[in-house]
Image (cartoon, rainbow, N blue to C red; front, side, top):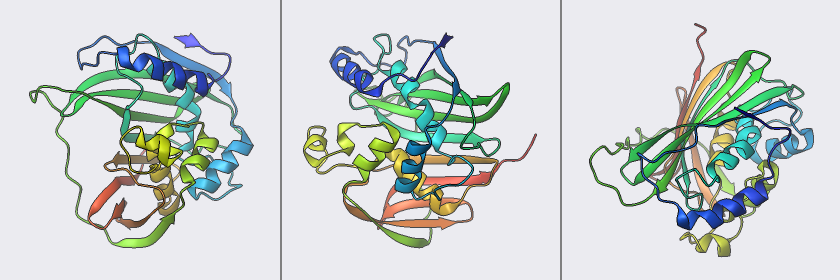
Length: 279
């Protein structure tokens, strides 16, 4: 375990990861660093937290952290691991495909947390190799929040051993229609620190094959969860199925603990919220 004194700066990490990307050789059986990074005694920046709440649609000034906000706290640690020379997947083009969150209790906004991140495994996927990154948040000895995110590096791969992709569930009833502004990517990037160029401007997004800038996956799920509501102790699951182009109009649909963000029949995000049962 490596204990950090402060959160790594994201700008240099993203630049370093981009420069190293052409030299990476992704494969599901590649060696990867087993290092666990720990950032102790972290207190959320309340100004950035308020900006995050505004852009994602959470109520500002609430006592607790939004259920997705610990992902933001751990993101610099994850980027340090994913941009490292020893990590075999290229950071450029890495796609966030899913997230699972277990929240054991509501986290106070003015709390002090120990945040840890490690890469759990690499897995074969029908389109390449997927990395699972685990983020954990503790108060003292107690785990209060944990997530597993999958990130896909696309490359040629045999069909054998591939990860099967589940089909979207049946369409849910649309509850609201949202018009998403073209600057959402820049606003979320400023609040979260994730300034990936595909989210910031049409010109930089075109360099990566997108016709316009696309919304951050974590913004889309946060926006859905802000509308849906989440119990203090909950399990959240979400799959990012298709990018949301900016600006754009989408339908938010929800029923019986499930939610979708979609454009007509095209599902962008699909997920669920379940109260967590104490063991």
